[in-house]
Length: 61
Image (cartoon, rainbow, N blue to C red):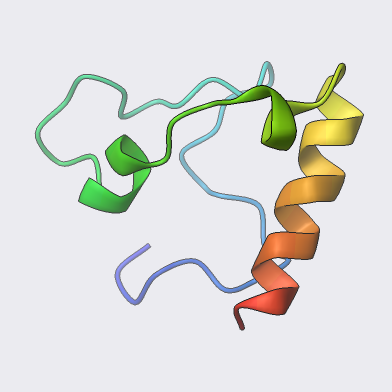
């Protein structure tokens, strides 16, 4: 996303399984590589992780 990803907008580089299509490629944005998964963010399910990410995006918008 040339101007970054707005809060609340799904990344266009995610596939149907929420895997990054740019993982391991040089064009992957540095911020994505710096965001390491951890239990406090990921929770116990995809739904918990997405809810946390949405909250973080809204708090930092």
